[in-house]
Image (tube, rainbow, N blue to C red):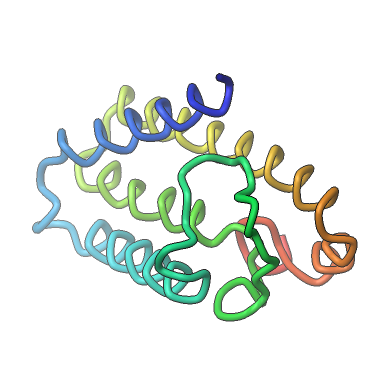
Length: 141
């Protein structure tokens, strides 16, 4: 149930930021963040496998540890992609409530990553070593 709440919060925060955006096409920084987020997301999706991605932090029964593509340096590039992508919509038309929604999104992906990492440590003995050479959301951080 908790996993579903996190997924719902992530979806609502991201959708709210995207659907209420204004001035995106007039903001070069916003466009850059959106393109960087989208590009990283597509790269991660292709590296992970087009049919393997799930929105839940729970592991699938056929889960495997992916360490190629952006996963070579970032353990959660899809979460980074969503956060950067949505930051572009915040930057396009900054407001307190948009910043708050973005911070909720960040808090949700941090929590989801913690759940996933605990499950990955249980399933894959090599995960601990992988965490020592990669950053959670950014390279080496």
